[in-house]
Image (cartoon, rainbow over all chains, first blue to last red; front, side, top):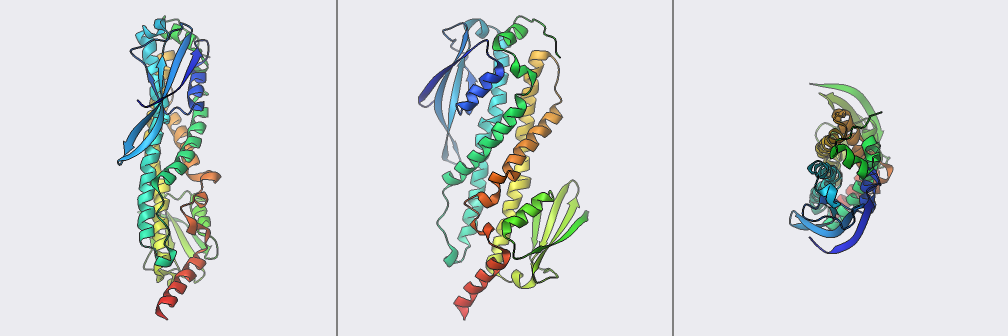
Amino acid sequence: MGEYVRHLSVNINQSLGSLWYLLESNNVDRVVVNNMKTSYDPYYIEIDIYTDETYIYGESVKFLHAMLMLPEHMFKSNEFFDLMDTFSKAYNTLHFNMVFEISDWAKHLQIHIENFEHHMPPSKAVSPIPIEKVREFYTAVGKSCIKDVSQKILRYSMFSLSLKKLYEIVAEKKKITMR
Amino acid sequence: MSEVIGHYKFAVDQPLWRLWEFLEKHSVENIYVEDKEPSSYSDYVEVIIRKRGRSIEALIKLPKDYLEAYYLKYVMRFFEVMYYDFHAYIDDLIDINAEDIAMNINKLHEEIFSTSLDVESLRREIFRSIKNCMCYHPNNAPKKTPFFYFFDYPLKTLYETDYRIIRRRFV
C-alpha cells in the first residue's frame, strides 16, 4: 500500500448506493473490506484511502485503494461481511479491472502507432507518442464509461437500501417484501 | 460463407474519419483493405459490406492509382488495424468485464433478496453502454484523439502527399 490520502465515513443509515457513489466521486479504483480492523463508531463505516501502484508490461500504473472498516456488530456477521465483500467485487470489476483493460489496450494501441510511425516517410516522421499520453486519454474515456454503467447499475433497488437495513436482512434474517 | 448486404461509393475528397463513421453507422466490426483488385471508379472508394455469420465486415477497394501509393497504402493498413482494435478487440474485452460485473451484481442481489436477476440482459446492457462510450461517443471518436492526425485529411490529399514525396525524390 502506498501513501495515505484521506479518511471518509458513511453513516449506516445511508444507502449502499450512496457508499458506491462516495467511492466513485473520490476516484477510488479498488475497494477492500478490512478483515482485521473495525471502525471506532458503531454508526459509521470508516474508509481509509491510499495510493497504490501496479505494473503492466513493466510500466507503473497508479490507482486509489479504499479500505472499508465496518462497525463491530456488522464485522462479526459473516453474512454481512460476505455481502460487503461481494459489493467490493462488483465495484472493483467495473473500476479496477477497467484500469487494467485500458492500460492493456493503450499499450496495444501504442505498439500499432509506433509501428506505423516507424514506417512513415522521413518528411512525415513525428516524435513517438509516450504510452502515458495514450493511457491518459483512454483512462478519461474509460471513466466516462464507468459513470454511465454505474448510473444503470445503481438503479437496482438493492442500492437504495440503507446499510443498516441490509445488515438486518442478511444478518438478522428479517424478510423484506419486494415490490 | 458471406452475404453482401450493401455496396457503397465513398468519395475520396471526404476526410478519413468520415469513412470510419460511415463504417460504424453500418455496424461494421472488421474491415479489409483490398490491396490487389482496384475500385471500378477513380474518385471513389468502394465499400462492400458483408455479413459473415453474426459479424459484419467491410471490404474497401481503393482507386487503381491509390493502390500504388506506398504511403496511402500504409495509412490504410493502419486504419484497418485501428478499426479492428476499436471494435472486435474491444468487444472481447468489454464482454468479459460485462459478464463479471453482471455476475457480481446478481450475487449481491441474491444475497439480499434470494432471487436472481436476469444476468444476460444486465450483461448486454453493460456491454452496450461501455461499447457506446468507447467507440461511438462523439467526444471519444477517433478524430478527436491526438494520435490520428491523418484522419482529418481526405484520401485524395493523402494520395497526393504521397505522390509529391515520390516526385521530389525521383524527379
